[in-house]
Amino acid sequence: MGRKRNASVNVLFQWVRSQSMKVKILLGAFLALCGLVALKLWVKNHQHFFIASETIHFLGIIVLIYKLTIQKTCSGLSLKTQELTAGFVAVRLVCNTLIKVDVHAVIDLATLISTAWLIYMIRFKLKSTYIKELDNFRLYFVVIPAATLALVFNPYTLPSLSGRIASVLWAFGWYIEAVSVLPQLRLMQNAKMIEPFTSHYVFALGISRFFACAHWIIMLYETKGRYLFLVGYGYLWIVAAFLCEMLQTFILADFCYYYIKSYVQGQLIMKMPV
Image 1: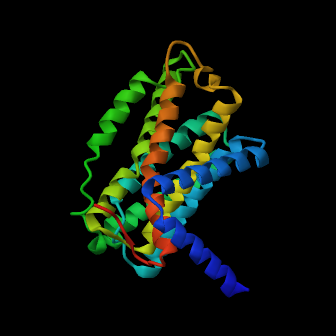
Image 2: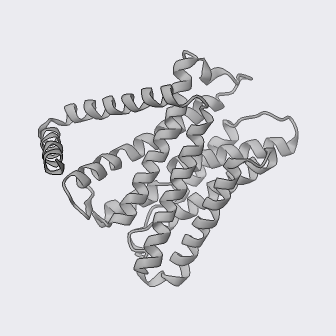
């Protein structure tokens, strides 16, 4: 039975590989749509999407911790991505804690501690295995635009100075999160080859973004587009946040495609296209 099932799966994958890129994109879009429909039918509380997103991100970091602990090497990992991750998670944790301590704050705290450990290991304990020359993404390319956008588009909810600062910080963290994976993707393109644990981590980020993106798409569907303009007050924070979510998803969609392709072909080491 197992052989027949495996043979059928192989035939299916071979058929998919033989199709044109246009057909593959359509198939991917169809599968994503099926996933969204399933989530809409099964998940009643849409906040669970964000909990799932944050949890999968944390599990991806656990994969990296396992890699560093077992293999004693940080080759293939971007220190800059981990620093950006620590930055936006810290901002989100502070803002969440000011409102109330809930499950989001607990997950963020665990993620921040784990990310800080990764940064410590890369900077000090495993410094000799860190390939700095490949991790050459300029952080000011993302930090400066994110700070500028945060000053202009933010969830202005409280008239007090502290409330205004918290709103700008929250927006800044949101924008940084949208592009935090770029240094890691740049490093992998420079290296051309990606070892399994790093690819598992980035794929986990892609799945994480899918759940967060599902929240937005389902809410847009249920409110017939009005969800983007529920806040009002003359600013476009919700629209900016939605565009950031879409940006993160599309940034990682290409990687997820090549990850699944490599897995189907039985390749332990991923190859990134130029």
